[in-house]
Length: 392
Length: 193
Image (tube, rainbow over all chains, first blue to last red; front, side):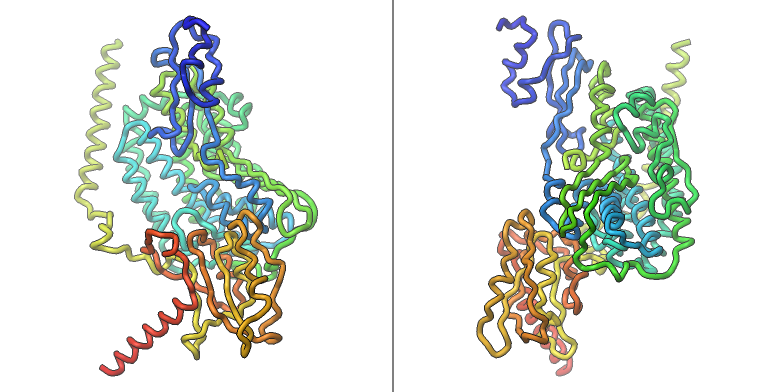
């Protein structure tokens, strides 16, 4: 092969399978540079690797490479009993662990026909929404960190710390929660928890205007977000994007509204949607979702019923009947789906996790085409990816 | 026209910066949120859920409430728990070895013995050791929840640190006895005073 041959790039690079088999974009004319963004890179959260082909500063082609923290969560489900799989759920998406907790326990409850006491449903709503806020806060800080603003993450973490303190009261941990059980939750909420949550709702409401003046209205941020990574409605649907990424493009699809699970139909809340589908819209949707979550928490606290927090009739070793079940909940990043096939034994026959980040990530390859590298970082951040969830 | 927009953008940007600086300035004079750990400690450790510990009987502080049913060892997702026991009056018991066949593969092989010991009324037995391998524990709390007599609780040991695997392998029975002795010594010391 001669150096002028378009494919020699692969031979010159002594990379791994992905770099060696990276086909250069047909649009490439002359010199292009193939660059590995990641797996260890400050602007990719976790161990995401993107192989990008650059023409100057413009991206011709981007290819995400996955699997760096694949932990066989689905296979693990097949070798553990139903209860033994619970701690895994806190580690799939560590930022919104309780949504995964919920998706799994609800799927098993649906399959086994376990009733959940009303109080437990309320506790689940309150804790899950708190966790959603903490996830969005971390995204907010980390995204701005990607864009070069350091201070906001400190404010975000100070607020997030309050949520972690609240959730620690009932769950006992601060990040990888394992709180929900079949037929309820593992511990009842305390008066302390209720007081602190009430206080937090007010505190966070006062805090959001500061976020707005500090960051959202900032010209520099707007320059990095407005009209960057415009994602059309059709493309978002085509890729199966969910969560704030889909809603930012103007599709009002929220599992909590479309297929209301648990007791979400009792609460009054809106689904924030964007107009243009750019990074700024996705940003605005998440900030608005924090407000909606606060509304849900407030309503749930006001109407919290007394009663059991755990169904006492759930057997110690749960054995759902033969069959299959799919259950979806709305996580901070989109629709979380759990599919379980049971053969009537003590462990699932097959378990499939649908991670919203997986679909959202693959948008990036198309979205980043033709943009400059700095904007690609902004686009990647605006998708709110959690790599452990994508790799599973 | 373009120059005008450039100027107005520059002014808007500058205003944004000033607003940001104002917020930072206000925050600067607020009390510090960071807790400087070795000199100060956080106040919410009471709600922390650390590794498990045995709970003593009310009337016998050296004896755990545990009835050695093996449910905790069976439910543990990572096979952290194992125990040794003997029948009261005898030195060894045939099934403990079988009961402990739950340490295979640490969570990859299903930690499930399929063998339940007969209830405590049928064969009365005594605990020799209650082993916890904290290296593999994921703090899910399933063992505490499943314990029929409430013999397990969470410790508040949040500053636990060690340099070797061995530092995290505990004999909880020994820990319980040491703890009880220590607390009885302090109470007697207080009584003497």
